[in-house]
Amino acid sequence: MTGHRRAEAAALLAAGGAVAFTGAGISQESGIPTFRDPGGIWDRFDPDEYGTWEGVARLAMERPDDLASFLAELRAAFAGAAPGPAHRSLVELERAGLLDAVITQNVDGLHQEAGSERVVEVHGSFSRTSCLACGHREAATRSEFLEGLDRAILGLRAAFVPSMASLLPRCSRCGGPARPDFVAFGEAPHDLAEAETLARGSRVLLVVGTHGEVFPAGALPDAAREAGATVIEVSRGDTHIGADLRLRGEAGRVLPPLVREALSGPRS
Image (cartoon, rainbow, N blue to C red; front, side, top):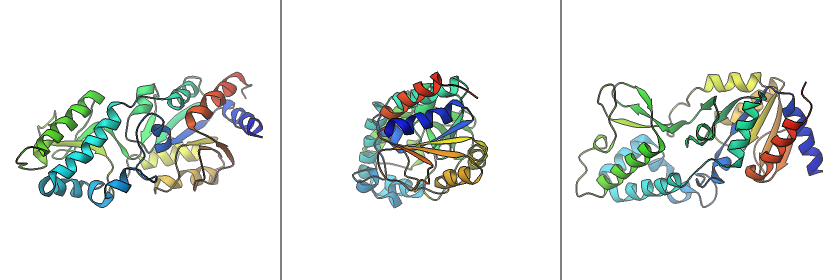
């Protein structure tokens, strides 16, 4: 039965017009821990404090050692992460002209690092900074991001932290403090209209590694189905995704053979 479902999914992908929608599960296999799963980061660090910009700024002044521990855990995860087989499989689909774009909830930049050309990051990215003074956004390499974390951790563990801004890198345009360009709790998603347009315009929405619990991004699969797309889900367990076709297993094991079959099959 699994082979039959994979063949059906491969035939759908082989016809083109697909869009991928990815979440934490695809990056977990690359070494980045999930935030929401049992044992994840939000089990150990209160998201009301560590998941909001205001909370982080308050922690920097009132409990700098606790914030330093949180940032050190992030640094360890991101330092060792690299694109996995699932990321590379999506690149193969895109290069073959079968995948139009990747919509991701992840902030790690691994899709771009793998080679994906069109990536819509609805929850922002640690691979960019956003100036708190002028709003200018600019790309940041992984090494620059890690160096920024190192400076922040060192500053937090120093005897005195004058301000949160003192821990941040500077904007190349105006010299103001620039924060990582992630979407914190309570902030609006990035490029949601573009993501909705892509989802509604797809023939196939390939959902990989997300439970569909975080809204408004979690509504994209339903929007795609309402517009006539077929939703294929790749997940390790039960989710809230309303899928037409489900493939169970780790993305890094499911996607490579699925993509190989799609690339070798007939195209319409």
